Every structure is written in structure tokens, then in C-alpha cells.
Image 1: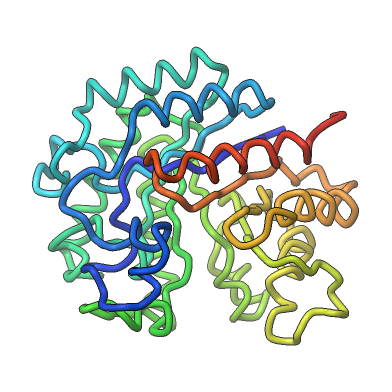
Image 2: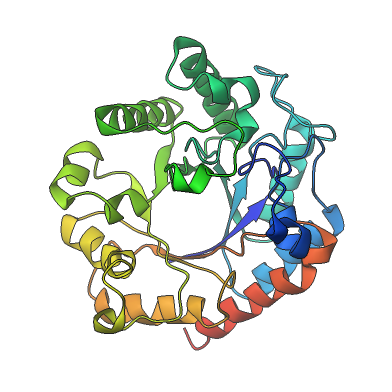
Length: 316
């Protein structure tokens, strides 16, 4: 069973500038998510987190690569301090030596593609597609042909970009066509696509099934404290029901919880899915996603996520 954690190498997956928002002044965890031309990463914490997660029974680390490496094919993308390919390979060996399977993540949602630099403002153009092909191919090679490559694709809405300088949202068939472009490109790199599933909160199951190949691994996510479906507000109910919908449609899935909002969420996610999907062989495992940059001021929260993960899987 997959027991995974999402950690960040690159950080430019949200705002394309430093917004003048009260939240950013008040909360460090939001400040981390604003654009930075420099790598926001602490190697000591990275290694401590990996070791703690392996000791807690984890077996996979999903690495948000973004612009945290210097791409040979697209050198214009790496931030100051980005890792070389050789450095990345060294750290991937470290993961494997700890018993952690490293899986790359590249988010192609227009809400989370600041890392693509000038190409984020060329969405769905020939130049954009060429860039995406290059980075997918290169990351697949650097990770030595990983089983999966996570392509993101969450939260592509105007509301999620309301504080950005540049707002763009694909919709209709273009969104699905671009999704399948990434899926086909990942397949051509010898990997299997993995994606966030929240588009299913807003579309019919038959539309999703028509446009998303069954071999794409799904990760629905819900970070709330309430899992009683009848007690949830109608607008929130699809966030939890999607775990059941994915099972009904035959997709393999890795449900995702987090201590971003509630410490109880990850354990409750595991409990809900075990109870409702207990006979489904397509439940591949679980992911904890703290959504904090790998920086020293986030150490307490990152390590707490691992402790919560360990407690949720105790006795297995």
C-alpha cells in the first residue's frame, strides 16, 4: 500500500507576486506561497523530514519539483539556487536508501503554474506545449523512469486566482484536451499520470469518465473536520462524495488528507475511506499533504504531519 507525503522543492505554484493582502503579513505559511526568485528550501529540514517519515512507516515521497531544478532543456525556468540534475539525483538516491520511492510532481493547472515563467502566459500555444513536453521528458529521465508523474490540475478557477496579476482559466473541451495532452506526454515518457480530482466536484461523472483515462491515478482531497456526509453543507458534500464516485467509476485512487486546517483530518480521511472503500482493490493507499515549504520555520508543522500520519496507520 502507498503511504506517501507531499514535499516541496520548488515553491512558485501560487501567487505570481507578493500580494498586498493582510493574510500574507500575518501568516508565514501563506507568505511562503508568494512568488520568490530564490529557492525556498532548507536541506537540513528536508533530510530530517525524510528520515522521520521513513521511520513512521512511509514508503513514498511526492516531490513538487516546479522550478526547483535547473532544466537543461529549459534553463530559463530554474530559480536562483535551483538544484542541478546531479544534485537532484543525489537526493533521490537518499530517498531510495531510506525506503522512500520518489515520485515527481509538476502542476500544470493555470492556478499553480507560476513556475513555468513566461510559458505560464502562453497557455495552450505551440510554445507552451513544447515547453511542457521538454520538462516532462527531462523530469522523467532525472527520476529514472518513475512509476508515476503527478500533473496537478487542481483549482483552475477565477476565484482561486483573484489576487494574481495574471488570471487565465481554461474551460469546456480545452481543459479536457490539455489534460489529455499532459497524460499522453507523460505516457510517452514511460510514466503513468497522477492528478488531483477536484474537477469532479464541478462536473458530471459521465463527463469525467469520458475525458479521463482509467489508468490515471486519482487523488481527491478534502481538508475539513466533518466527514458525516449528511451533516455537510450541500456545497461541500461533493468534496467527500468524490472518494465514493471515483471508486464507482473504477479509478485507482490515493485519498489525500492534511494538517493544513485540522489536525484530525488525515486520520479521519483514512478512517472514512477504509470504512467506505474497504473492499475496493483500487484504493492504492494514502497521501498526507502539509502544504508547507521545506523551510526551517515550518519544521514543527511538517513533523507534526508525520506524527499524525504515523498515528493514523498504527497497528497496520
